[in-house]
Image (cartoon, rainbow, N blue to C red; front, top):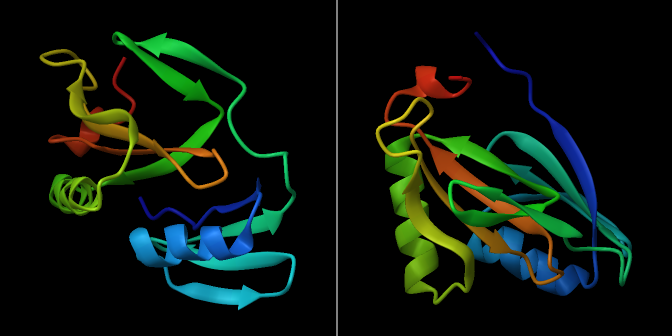
Length: 139
């Protein structure tokens, strides 16, 4: 199955900080931009940071496998190899994780490596990977 790229636009408090986080730390190439927004290539998907001070961040959390998962959040399902490389890079950069790199649902359907972090505006991101990609929608 070939997936079409998604598009996600979301608020940030500071475009320079967003540029440093998404373009620098996460390594997302920058596309078009203006004084009010920046496009990024988020592993083949288009995310757009829109300047909207005070409007970013999560509103609550839900418990998932013993962790408080921020709501809302967005992110990527990656290969396990790419996930490990990103986890290493983020740990070496001293990232303050919401949920540090871990394996969730161990030994159960949908077992996955996951990590949560926030961008400088407080938006929550999750990066996950499956040893068996067919488990993405396992019940």
